[in-house]
Image 1 (cartoon, helix red, strand yellow):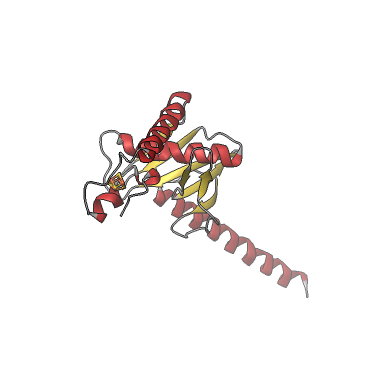
Image 2 (cartoon, rainbow, N blue to C red; image 1 turned 90 degrees about the vertical axis):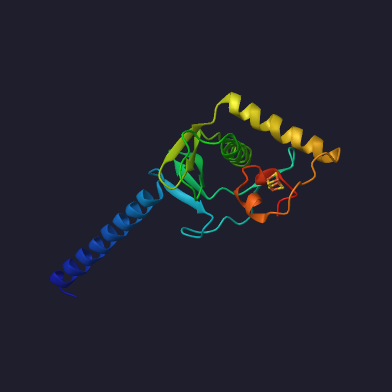
Length: 174
Ligand code: SF4
């Protein structure tokens, strides 16, 4: 093969690579995701997590919508279909914090923050010691109430469960 042909093949490969990178960046920007390697996405855009994250000690399980790796840290991303409130709902923060906790335990690396992405806005929620403690106490309280039979569902509305921020730890969800 002469050197001109090799040059043009290399050029075409470079252009295709650049286009793919641009498309990926554009896709990530449209989803409001941070720069970094996406290692998992629930809607199947970049691949599948084999199993949900699980912590046997707390009896906690969950699957964030995305996990992004950034500078060696894993950041969970939870996507909400609705418009952003003034500030994120507590139940959404707790759901995201539970993913931070599961990632911390599963990957032995503590996420510095998680992302709550609403339709029009994305909030970065710092995974502080205080938030970590709050989510542990919440999960423990729910487990205790479950054991004592104090947590009976009061409705038959699947839509309500679909939107509920506590479905990550609720075994009565519809
Ligand atoms: S997921 Fe559980 S806590 Fe949430 S609305 Fe449904 S039953 Fe109630």
